[in-house]
Length: 254
Image (cartoon, helix red, strand yellow):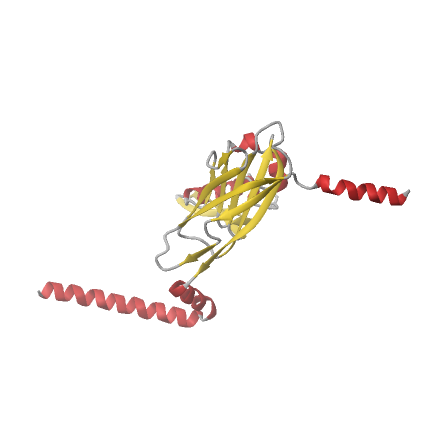
């Protein structure tokens, strides 16, 4: 009897596999930060692989998210006391991506339920993890919201609805704009296929972002030899100041 049960389970396994899977392509999977780097645009495109005809029901929707390296962020609240602004409360947000962009094929709330968003942490608010604050901190959630607001203003966080083109529920494409002030590291790229607000399949890869050339030399020097880096910066500042004063003096004399 146990053999029959095992055989039935093995027969059922293929049915549990995803019926629709992502075959992904990227215009580039590596971004090089050079001295004149002013941002980049990544083209994300792909196709849906199926073993059966397109299922009936709600149309297929696509969500693409790109997240930079996460790190803790300390957020401080300022209040005006006795005519001056002072820091009052501070909260450590446990993990916030340095960059986060979401592109969707339709309005976000229409293609992903809140339960699925909580499960996969797709929205900007859910991508930030804040375990908690001290009991005396009032309105602790406002600190995480401040991180989102500030980084949205800086162009580091964005959600771009209706920017993923889906053709015949089979091909999709979009582009993700990455700003100039990127943090080095692996950028987690996820693609979700949804139907009726539920995730039916997902795919994950990474985009490698690294400093190269002079940027890499200066970055390594600042981390590995901070004293020499400081002395070099001071020497460059003195030389620049002397050069500028000499140039102005020559202009006045002529």
